Image 1 (cartoon, rainbow, N blue to C red):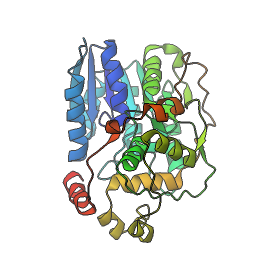
Image 2 (tube, rainbow, N blue to C red):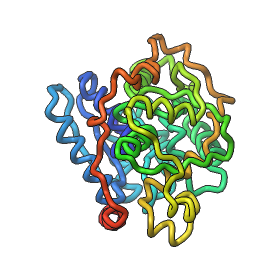
Image 3 (spheres, rainbow, N blue to C red):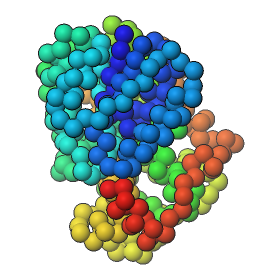
Image 4 (tube, helix red, strand yellow):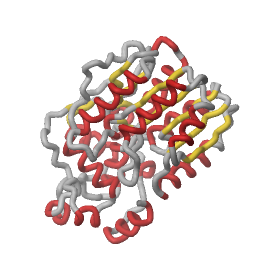
Length: 331
């Protein structure tokens, strides 16, 4: 039994791969990605080095996808396929076309027994005028192509392998400004712990009862974005800087223009755009999580002030000039 994970360079995917690798349930896990830039490739290389230090009967193989034939070859070698929306913000193929292409190839393959798609809300199509609607439309089209698809639409994630919450935590720890100007302040989120999310993915890959079903994947707590920021701030023990940078107030990073693209790292542009455009996860057509029989961890437990570990999230502190240099090296 072999598994193909497409989108393996993003952080959420790596949390899932880590659990599946440790389980030893697969002879081989094929990690495929487009690796559009140096940063994504280096992140995967570091992850792979860490992963192979763990004892497992599972073999890990990585493949760079450059064209459709590469993806077709990789899918045809797998009995199980896991598609995870990538978290890259520049120089990448359309997420809409990627997920549909995976479904088309998996449908025509004689070897694929199961296709699971994990599409975190924080990885929606940010360049689209209506990202949530665009994402939902592409996901509905994929279900038409592959009716047995298991679709997991997750809320914001938190934990070691999260994207948005880890980025916010890192900025708070490093005393960096966060542009926080949501269009509406009452939008709510129920963040899901990345280790719980990995367990859910593992369950859908193992059990045929999930075939053809779609789920809204959420944690047990319901918070506004402001309350989410407050929870992270208390966990780090640092003061939080919101909208305090005069340059970022004058030239908001979420406002796409040539100057903002020069000033800010694409990941920060995307983060601020996500916070500004965030809408509560739309659950119509998605089942709740009653089919999953384990207790989910609370963000207020994992990120309590008593469990503060700033070093876990601390990244190199960059000046604005250094950040611009890094941007051109990575992107």
